[in-house]
Image (cartoon, rainbow, N blue to C red; front, side):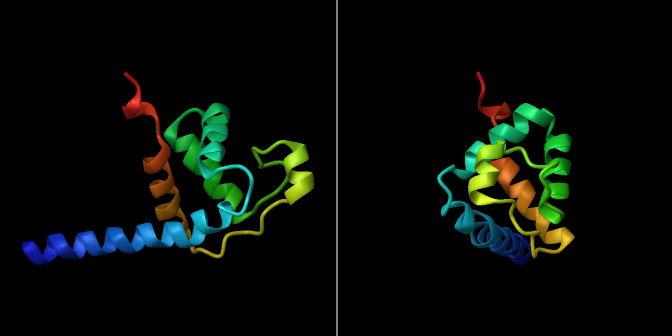
Length: 108
């Protein structure tokens, strides 16, 4: 039982490192912090499922039509390249992103 617990902790830790390596690392180079993207998605799509679906679709195939960023931002920094993560990795990273920035459990 203890081995299973530690295995789960290791897997979660590896996923968190993947998120930091594949998402946060690049977003730290931009003038808009990574949490601001979350709030833009939340304002546009509202629900957890809708936000995650929109992010997933955008990250797999980024287009002007799918972006949530203003035109001036896109003009200056362009549309990102498609994610190199496979579908499973991408969904895991989106879930970590959601859990990191969701506000619903934090409102009182």
